[in-house]
Amino acid sequence: MEIVICPDRDKGAAIAADIVARYLDRLQQPILGLATGSTPKPLYHLLAERHHRGELSFRRCITFNLDEYVGLTPTHPQSYRYYMQQHLFDRVDIDPNKTHVPDGLPADPAVLRETCRDYEAKIAALGGIHLQLLGIGANGHIGFNEPMSSLASRTGIRTLSRQTITDNARFFQRSEDVPRYAISMGIGTILAAEHCLLLAFGDRKARAVAAAIEGPLTARCPASALQMHPYATLILDEAAASDLQCRPEYDWAAANALGTPGTNNF
Ligand code: F6R
Image (tube, rainbow, N blue to C red; front, side, top):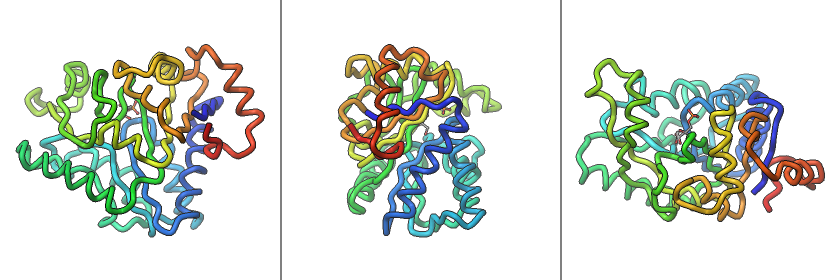
C-alpha cells in the first residue's frame, strides 16, 4: 500500500486529481471507477476546473460508478446518478453513453440481479477498470459493502444497514422513501481494478483508516481487503491519519519514494 499523508483535504484532492489526470492523458481508452459521497467532491471540482481551463479531457474516458440506491430515479436528488451529473459529468466533456451508474430500477430482484450481472460483464468486456476511486465509511465499508461482506463479492444487491437507513432519513421527506437496498460493486470487483485510489479526510475516518491499513485482513473492516491489492494508494489528511501507529514508516517511504504519489506500488 502506498500511504500519502497530506496537510489537508485540498492538498489530498490535488494529488488525487494529478493521478486521475495521468490516466486520462496516458491511456487511449481510460476506464475509471468512480465513487460518490462528500469525500470525492473536491476532487471532482478540481477535475472540472482543469477541464474548463482546457487542460483535461474526458472524451476518451469510460466510467463505472461503485453503487446506486434501489428504487430512486436518476433524477432523484439523492440518487448517485444525479450526484455524478451534478459534480462531474455535466461539467466535463464526457460522452454520456460512456458513463455507467448501476440502474436501481425497477426494484424487482430478478431484474436487479440481471443488472448486476450485466454490469460485471460490461466491465470485463472492456478489459477491467484502470483506476478505481474509493471513499471509506466510518465502519470501514467500501462501496456499499458493509462489515462482514464477503471479501470476494461481486456486483450485487446489498441490504442497507440500520445505521445507514437511519443516517439517510434526513435526506428524505418520508421515512418510507428512504432506500432499504442498493446495488454495489463487490469487494472482489473492486480488487480486480488495476489501481485502487482511496481517499479519506477528517477524524471521523481515523479508526477505519487505521483498521484498513494496520489491522488484520478481516471482513469486519471491508477496506482491509486493500491489503491484498497489488497497487493501492491511500490519500489521507492529517486527521484521517491520526490513529496510525506506524506513521514514521509512511513518512520515510514518502520522503524516499522514487516516483510521484500514485506511482509507488509496494
Ligand atoms: C460512495 C460509496 C461509499 C462512500 C463512503 C464514504 O459511492 O461507495 O462507500 O465512499 O460511505 O462516504 P463519504 O465520502 O460521504 O464520507
